Length: 398
Ligand code: SF4
Image 1 (cartoon, rainbow, N blue to C red):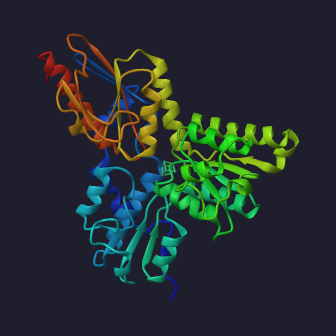
Image 2 (image 1 turned 180 degrees about the vertical axis):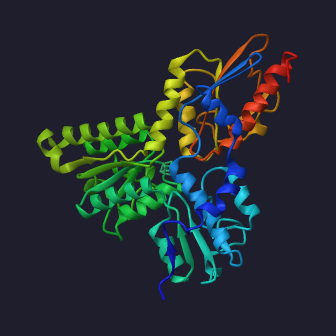
Image 3 (image 1 turned 60 degrees about the vertical axis):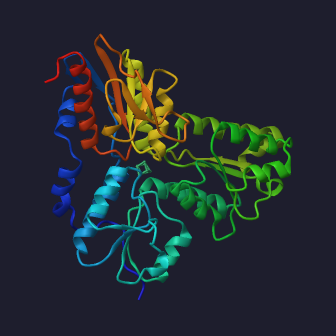
């Protein structure tokens, strides 16, 4: 019998609505939105970005996970990995007895038809899906529609003989799933570029200025099996991991277009180059909103809340960092005191503690935003903690 796959929820939306609200909603955040995204208390003013927090894809994935637990109370429920990149949400799911295949001691080989497996919002590779199907597991697929849109584009590139150039992180779950689609069962090729610098290396190769061995060594982990830069960079189609910095993705697309034009002439572009902007609208909205927040009023600093492995959160911090002091924190506990903060600086691998982060002796205007996998209740807790830190420092704590 083919495995059962749920792709549109499990008809229990209303039954889990209350527990989802209790777990992730914040009345404080709702009231800040109602007050023009502004929170004022004593010497503290917080300006909240107009788009922040849970996106439609994450909302749906978390909803389906709770529905799955409710629908199968007596069967093992397993996630292929983190459902989204937020430690708080993943812990909440563990607390309900949902296991993670990536945990020590877990193995796909141990799964049986009795197991219910949830596929995350970023999707899974074709190979993993096939393995799960072979084991006969019941599947709950929460892959976001915006990720499916990227897959549609790279599959079309492969079918038409174009190599997919993906602006993304080759190690990220979403990009691993996307390249498996771009491979088209071994008939398609791909190259993943992380940033403008890597795009420039590939563009130089297209122009005939690259070194083959150096190219293959540099992109060893970011190219399809059998990738030959002399053969597979002659017809290319650009796409992006959905959560990249959209301005950078557009620039990278333009760099590749120009390289193809320089090498083969403008007239050849039409059948050697394609591009689709596959940044999702939720990512775009959050990036636009934080840029608008930075432009709207003077701020002393900005706090960005979200998992350190959350691509879209890291990119929100990247937008802010050239403009003003930026602190990317994973959780409210990172606000250690009015003197110390635990955070991950833009571009750093690890978290660190900085001192003297909060201006003293005057009123403070803060910007606040959060990534697409951060629930409102964490934002509410951060606001309350900031209030206590700022106003208790001045003896105004309520
Ligand atoms: S960030 Fe975009 S692609 Fe990812 S889950 Fe959210 S809406 Fe979907």
